[in-house]
Image 1 (cartoon, rainbow, N blue to C red):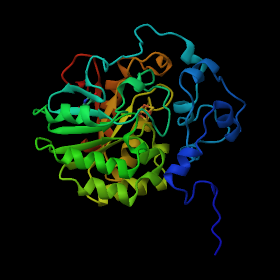
Image 2: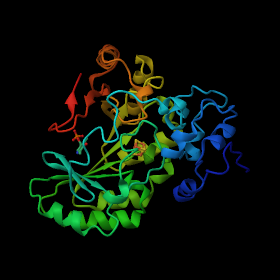
Image 3: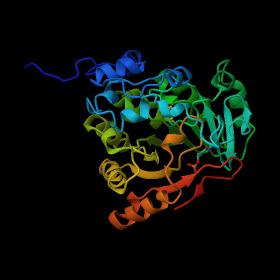
Length: 333
Ligand SMILES: *Cc1c(COP(=O)(O)O)cnc(C)c1O
Ligand code: SF4
């Protein structure tokens, strides 16, 4: 029987092949979506290039310049307008760097930056100006691992980036094996957008190294809009949960994308239908170029209140802000 597919190029393809074939410029993306190049900015694109893989692009509506997934990846002219208080290192990451590749701001938890690469380039990203070449664990893991070994207060290591899941399962398995030998570590958290963007990334090998570690695995994914969770993504999330890996979601509150109660409630419902817990709704980090995504200060708390009236308690995320120098995320609602 012939299987007719709308998207022959990504069905059955490996996640690596999908990454290779990702759209890397605004013009191609607009052409793919039958758009007449709406408000494209060459300057914005030069400072932070487009990266949009096909399984994500497939979920965008053709011909709609306001599509909420498109707006997350398309370089807009609005990025060129400076916004007061928006900077290149809004959350103080450079000051929190202990050793290249290791960041600790909060008690008990340290973040290991294993790569600067991602499977999608999100225009609002607080790390869009981060000097990765100086931060990445390029020359080997030993300095960062040694620093972790010497930080006896750290119980949880968070694999971060960039997106840690752009690394091969083989490399990740080796990193996790070495982390497992550090006796004061108890939990391994993976912060990743890959299962949302390219669900094919949830391979059996990935489940293997997550489940095979002595450390208790937790995964935190990142979806901002219900349209990001299509059938394939839902299946990938359920596969992780079926394998006993707790999955949480963090979203960013973004003007024009998810700044209304209907959208946020539907996002939560799709997540809990997959047994994924809505964890944080982040206030936008004030990163240069992202000013047009900012919402009025009172809106976030009002949206959370509206969600509380409509959803079970476990479906309502906590509204948080990250402020440089604080001992943890600040809870706003
Ligand atoms: C957000 C963040 C964490 C994780 O915070 P949780 O509240 O535990 O989710 C850890 N380290 C750094 C540097 C962070 O920015
Ligand atoms: S996937 Fe995460 S780290 Fe990468 S660009 Fe998007 S928000 Fe930033």
